[in-house]
Length: 336
Length: 279
Image (tube, rainbow over all chains, first blue to last red):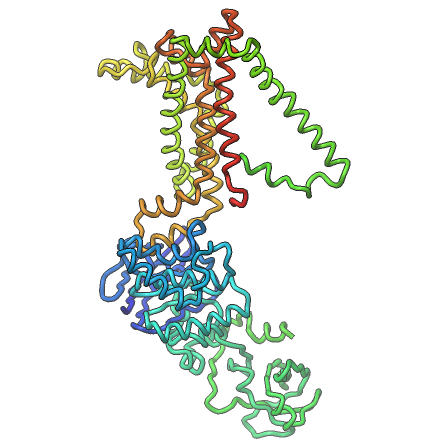
């Protein structure tokens, strides 16, 4: 049930969507393809499903070369961002679709559909039309429909992208629990790093058609392979030539140790339990630091106070490249 | 076409008096142009009670013409439905060089006069000097001055009607559902039958009805390619003209009434059946 992707390339006209991508997705796990929009992650998912054809390279599903198999022969379940509900069929018939195509006996189909509707908590909506369901319900129906055919792999393309924040969070938790129950190899595409960090066993970071890093969430967060991954997975700020997370910076009032960077507090913003402090170093660099409310009160900091900054031991840092990108510290500043 | 009217809701046309005035103008216009003349045809058909209607329905030449009209119209509609749906899917779902050219070409039958269509078909399929005609005729298949030519002419004239109804529905539908069906194991034919066709059903039905109405009433192109042989290739529209020119006004109105009745009835029936919440 593992998926092997070897040297896959795909172009749309002059645009390179995927550039020699190789990933192996382990069986039975929940893997996230994470990256910015237009980075090629959806294209990769669609190539796995057979909805798109790779220009070069191979796709193997469960040990079988699927590169040139049409989608209906791959036995994958696919869930679309906008549900792709069959609008003219009831919820029950939607879920039964794959089984009807496979010409299973009627009684079996009925039982299986009932089982799945119970799994996605839609029993009482079985005879409704998709248009009578909410977005979250429709997406759960789509999930049941994809699971009905007992797919070797389950593929979800931004499954919660069209839902509002609250429902998205609920469904995210629910997907995690569902996966723990069903254990089908699952790949989902998302551009939301929090979603990936929270739900996935394994994350593949894809940017500009290339794989930037593959690993479990903790590893990606603690040991980012490059500044892109570092920036994409969470807020960052720059201290000297180092990229570091604002909450990994330690702030010391008054004169500090020799290794510390001296500066002055130029701004303090409080957002709930989080205190965001802007320190301008003596070299003129603006550094963002975040503290919890308690840390802040214990240090007794105030505006214009002169302080020293150090990076907390064992914190993930990445040397910045010479080319300064549109930085996350800028967006942090802008979000104030 | 039925949908355009639905979008003009109360928002358009501003408040009170303007809206009423607009409504009055449109109603009067349609009444004078469509409803009243059609009504007069009906009234003239029944000017002597059922005499004219009985007369044409017992005239073997007229009944033959009516039957021929129905046969040709049904054949043309079936051909146009199959190809119309096929071409629509090709246009919407596949990107290929020449889509725009094909699109423009599909409007030609609507813009070219039917009589030109008739002449063009004679040039290609004519038995003596046509392009294909002599070859086909040698093989025993007569096109021009025979039923196949009349079907051909009718198909040509009504060609875009199904396509123009189905294409917008397909475009709005998107291909998500079709892809979902494919990923669930359905092959192309199953996907079409179970997903695409039910979704575009009302577009197809409306296209079929419009084509049927248009095909029943086709005159110019059919007149050229049929040869208008009494009892053989004379259709109902040709009967109307013949009777009208021969001062058999009663017969002409009665036949015209039958033609209009079928066309109007089918449009009304479909409009009534079509679910309101559709789309």
